[in-house]
Image (cartoon, rainbow, N blue to C red; front, side, top):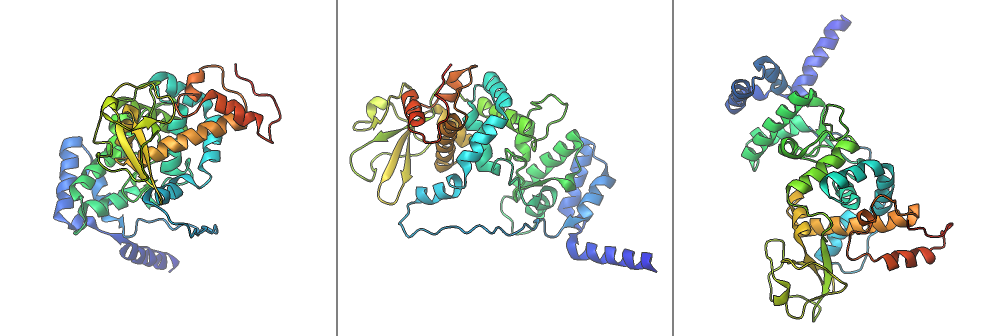
Amino acid sequence: MHKLIAVFLLVAQSSLFAVDYTKKAEVRRFIEQMHSRYHYKKEYLYNLFKNVRKIPYIPQKKSQKKVKKSSKPKGKWDIYAQMHLEHNQTNLGAEFMFKHYNTLQKAYKKYGVPPEYITAIIGIESYFGKNRGTYYVFDSLTHLAFDKGKKRRKFYRYQLKEFLKMCYKEQIEPRAVKGSHSGAIGLAQFMPSNYKHYAVDFDNDGKIRLNKAEDAIGSIANYFKENGWKKDEPVGVRVSYKGNRFYGLKTGFSYKYHRRDLKGIKPRVHFPYNKQVMLIKLQKAKYDELWYGAKNFYVITRYNHSDYYAMAVHKLATKIKKRYLAKYQTVPKEDKKVYLANQDIDLKDIVKFYLHSPKRKNKVRFP
């Protein structure tokens, strides 16, 4: 009797919380393509698509933290920065750099990407691994790929295909993988299509696991390198101009200028970069903050096609580096350039910061 009740409850639960997508002709065609092109077993795929979670969201515990509301006027950049740069990101980033120092050094030597930029990406994308996603990726991608009225269905079918290929290659159960609503996975929040191009087995264990810090670090560095990152070149620098609002020239990563043609616009600090630059405008409440963006700034926008995103990465990387030096007191001997790569951080400023720090226990030591 108890067994019959259990079976009944299981069937009822399946009908309430799962959807049979094999009833859709386009799903059946998708299964046929996966079978004929990539040799997937039809039976396995039919079982997957017969039991798609109706709600792929994974309920989370409500946070008790109260967000302080400010009455001060805010511009677009102020709002964006508050979302991405003001949640203990700097301290956590410094701790992450310290914990994964050897792996970050290895990535810098192989790909030329400084540790603070890799760390900043992980901070913004997954809060240093604390927020890797609240959705079941297979179910979420299936809804996005095959539900009527969903935008970019073709794009998500491609992501679903790449996701299943990834799971097969890495021998991962598709229904167990968690990520974002759109299918981004791991500390680096890679889309499935990025996996085949950029993901690397950086700890040499024969598997690529983007939920592991080592593989995430190597994969981000490889992504940057493959998209044109130039070792030891700057990312950007803040510039001065007349007035509080900047008009007249087009801004954004799509427009490039020779510095000699930008009359009345000058870097606030020394900027040894003679190639073309972009003008990046950050709209604040009372003025526009203007920056030169170098080629490496553009590379960051390949990760997320947004000026604000790339600037958030740059500013967070800068803050993480300063905090790392302040907290751990000593610049590692292997390569000072790794930790002093940004043009807007001067060695004298770091020494000055140390000397005026009330928590300073030891003298500053630079090897």
